[in-house]
Image (cartoon, rainbow, N blue to C red; front, side, top):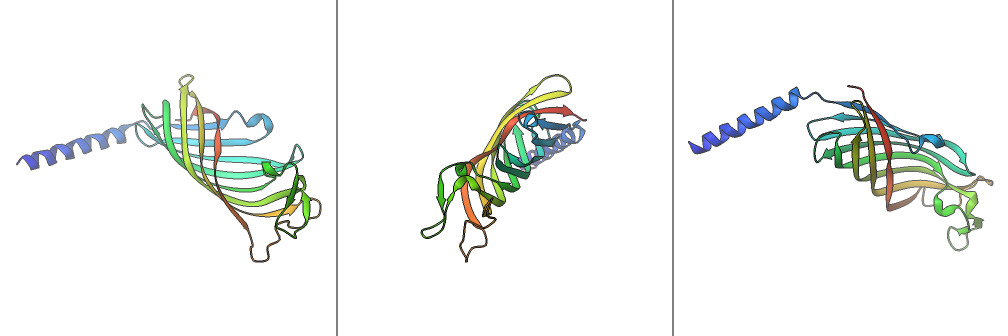
Length: 207
C-alpha cells in the first residue's frame, strides 16, 4: 500500500511539473555579438526556452574577409548550444555544451612570420605567404552570464572552448601550390584544445 501511495505521489508530481512546463510562456531571443560587428564580422543567433532553467541556442559566425590586414580571414561557422541556468532561464549564470562546424580559408596565427618547411627536403617558404583551406568540427563547453537590461533587452557575456578536429590543405598565396606535399594524404589533420567562441551578445526578446 505504501509503495502504491508513493507511486501515486510521484505520478502526481510528474504530472504537475509537466503542466507547469506546458503552461510556461516560453521566450525566444534574437541576438548579435557586439564585439565583432565593428570589424564587419557577423555573429548572430536565436535562443529558445525549453523549460524554467534550460534553453537551446543556434548561432552563426560569418567573417567574409578575403583579406584582413593582409591575412586570409574567411570563416563560416554554425553552432548549437544546450544551456542550463542555475537560477532561471535568461537570468545570471549558466553552463552548457556546444557543437559547431566551420568552413574556412584562413592564415593561422602561427604563420604570420618566420620560415616554414613541411618536412626535410621540402621547399623552404616565408610562412607569411602560406594559408590553410579546410573545415573543422568543434565539441566543447560554454559558460556565461546574462544581465537583464530592461523588459525586452538582455546582455549575454560568454566564453566557450573545447576540442577542435581540423582537416585542411595548405597553399602558397603567390605560387598557388600546396606546401604540404605529402602524396599519401589528401588533407592535413590536426586536433587541439582551444577557446573558439565568446563575446558580448545583445539580445532582444521576440516573444
